[in-house]
Length: 409
Image 1 (tube, rainbow, N blue to C red):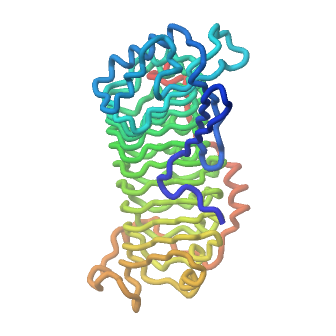
Image 2 (cartoon, helix red, strand yellow):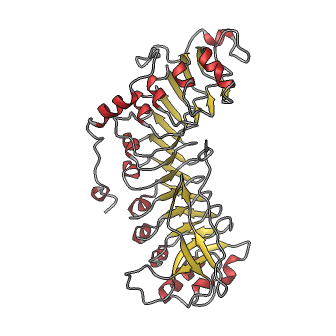
């Protein structure tokens, strides 16, 4: 059984050496098994248009520190010879007068300090921007919405700040957005989960407020909101979960309440991490519908009751972590996990006769014991397929088209 994306595993690069007369580079990411179009670039291509030269010189002037001397090559009109810049032939059917256009920028781990400039939108045919692990700061230029060919935008591990960069939501063909490890703050707009993004990485920022109710409408296969300050409840699913959500990471936030029954509608999910929050109550029986789940982590919450056999019986499980909750027991089916070579951590609970449990006084008062969402686990699996059909007949979560939002004209 293939293990998909171990928590915060990033997209892969593919670098190929082709031809004998020129050195060509293919750049692409692989998002949960769905690869984006690879762009072929040649560092011996003819000079590109003067407007692309203008864009790079404007950006060069906004970079204040270059400890590796990368920008020393950013001289002269042939931008295809610049280090970190990759070119290709213009897309078919375009009106470009140049035989070669800038298709990709890869400056990962360059340790550059500076800011992004609006002139980058002059790079009309740019498909990929990878700026992981630099020291760029400030905000994302509004002009980025003009990059109609851009599919991958990786700004992770920088020093960007301010509210969510709404200009990224107006990039028409973007499928991969990585804003991890920055200092963005404030609430996340609903329309982030409306478009065609396949990878949404927001972890390790300062985002706060409630997770938008429209979350499960997303078409993304990977959504990570970990290590932020999101509060309130996990959005309920109304039978309209995205068609292929495979990894949902909500760990280390300030979420409260119970796991909604609708979580069982995530029929394709393989990794679900809700650990290090303040979630309470019994686990919903709909978890038995997660037939493809491989990693389920609900550690360091306030769940109680008996761990349902329906969870331990999930056929694809590779790792189940329920440590540091208030579970009072589990049955023989859960004991069988060890014989299935499933990682099973139940330490720090209130299970009599088991090692590494809470001291008895801590088990006297269960946090959130008076909540109305407490459930008695079902003795048998729910009718998952029937629940899906019934759910699909419910009205979709309403939303407004992004084009009508006042701050996204």
